[in-house]
Image (cartoon, rainbow, N blue to C red; front, side, top):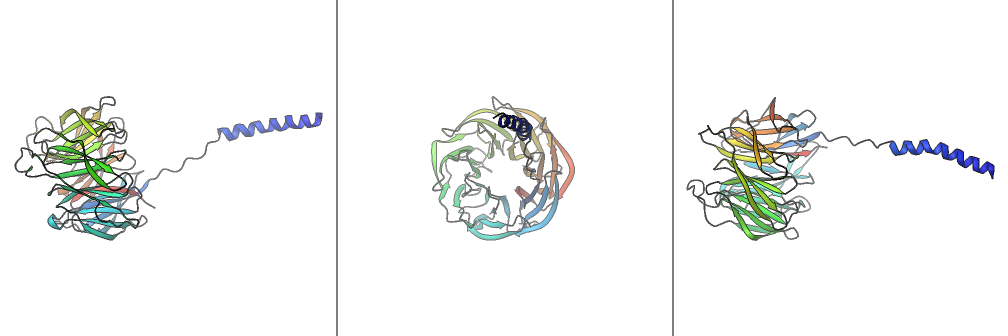
Length: 388
């Protein structure tokens, strides 16, 4: 018995260091993804663009390298990749001949292969997005003010539409630009229960109940929120926590902050601020808006003033405070995008045929040009997907 007791004591003493070692040894962290593909949608009419361009991107350095034309396509102005990263979808902005295209995506080479095309069921589609399940494509047709929903089939092709909404109602006071409904943006809410849309012609943010099982849309109650007459709402950006959303208005060069009730799908306006300096009196049309993934800063682009305006977001109130205004290094920044790391911003200057890269100061929200300029004809939209 004494011998057995001594053996147990000895084993317990030996086991203690091993237990301490196992409890304090941490598993090595998985290496952060740094290699991506980037796709640029362009205008091909009256330009020398061939369609959709592909690039390799290193998030560790912010460097791009060209892979050339990924797919020849007519006016693929807006492109998007669903959550599974297997496909790419584009709107072909071509008046009465407008289409929506589905491509398979080769993540090793960046090559795109056309799967199918369907009529956009409206004129001049300018925005495309996915519901949160990645099973449906939602499209905003600018000239006709309509919005179709298409299912994504298992092989990536687009199926026949499950919904088609036609906007109508009271038009804004700008007779030249608000001559009819002009749907400019549509996306689903974080919980996938609602789809929100911006209509430039109606001065409205419209809210629809979204049925994720059927891919259908039905007006919410109330069905819309009015903005100031003549605003021309263009794009919308949610703060990552979903509590607030921000609307950039093209005609008034403003950003409006709203409190968002996720349960009811309703909006309450908090504030409207200008994106321009007081002394500026030239022509300007705002374009893109985005909230950084840290939720602390908002960015909006100015076409005419050719700059990006940076605002700080009050965490509790959701309101905006001006931080800075940075030239984009080109003409007509129609769109800009954050890279997946959140460290860089890419400003797409449509009329100067380039994309200018900025380093983001995470502490202040400021933008500093890196000196890298990417040449691409008539860039309109940029999206990233992890490479293999």
